[in-house]
Image 1 (cartoon, rainbow, N blue to C red):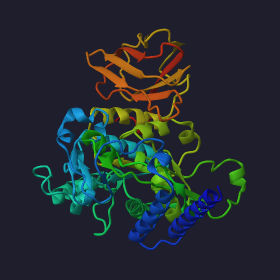
Image 2 (image 1 turned 180 degrees about the vertical axis):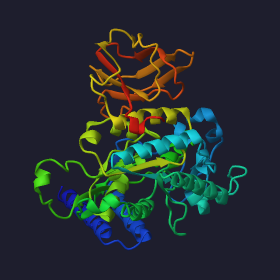
Image 3 (image 1 turned 135 degrees about the vertical axis):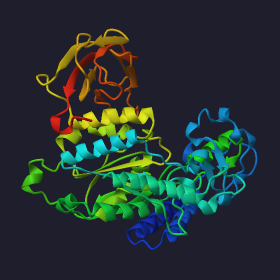
Length: 497
């Protein structure tokens, strides 16, 4: 028993020492490569005293055969080329072989980044409406994986016609179109030759990629006039532990589809805290700065700050607090229309809004258009009952509820719909609108299950037709609760869209 006790105590000391090394490295960094080496050493110490099953609580390597470790070749089996193999791994379709143990997907080789006039107009309108409220929008358009990781591409497993040069040219073309239209848009098309911007077996960025991006964005944000007036504070990032044992998303899909065992690994758990205590002022006590002046929207790249430390890095380099309103699994715009419809946005308006989205997103699609149709009126907010040009209030007693049937003579240009759905707020919700010219809208307003829903929804009218509507209808999977609806008119200074 004494030997076991000593071993446990010694194991604890080793783990604490390895964590101290990692924290010191973060506080006094040298290079991305040395950080990786220290992290690898911490993993070795951790595994010395813990088996994979003890850490994860499940069998991580259920298939016969040897374990494929980091940096070793990951073979792509025949099943990985079949669409039916990706029922549970839709976002990883189709896996492609890379060198040095790297994996890619078909979408990672995207080299066309068109921007339709309609999509550009939505971006411009969003930017102008925020500017009218004294808010600066900065878009970070995350780079495509293959464009930055060319040295890891297998030339024998590459889409016909793909070239890194063409991808870079078109990627930069998108950035230029956005910036020429007055929308501040930042991208990463070049990185140091020895940097791995992404993880070898996952779609997300590496710690080096996070740090590099945060530095580039800091340079841009510091030039925004409103940045100078934002209160400054010093932050420090620390690794406070190691996350549960996991594989990257590509690795997890490949192991299941091809029935091979791929090494799982541990990710650092980050926390970023102020170096000094906040000194309260009279304004603070009155609640005038209850929220940070800089807000970040986006995908899991931004949302998973405990794993990637993107927000933490921005806090350190900007020397000010940053509120993380990003959403994992929300795609192109879910975090945006969730945030703009929130009490936080309207009660504590920010000065700078950073919106991160991925190069794989289709910002020209009908789905993205419908996202903009929710985002833009949400910024304006709900009109009062007195200001509403039409209103409805009633209980939801069936899966379908119709309202506004008596407004057939009201043109809907520069009009938006505001909905409140209560008891419960969590539900699937679709809205259907039939216009007098025969056109129709059928839009899914359902919110992600990963967030707390406030039951407030917005939708811009007139995107399809300027004609009046025959009726509005909501459909829900929970025929209970209450519905309140108002039709609101945009102010004249932002009308005429």
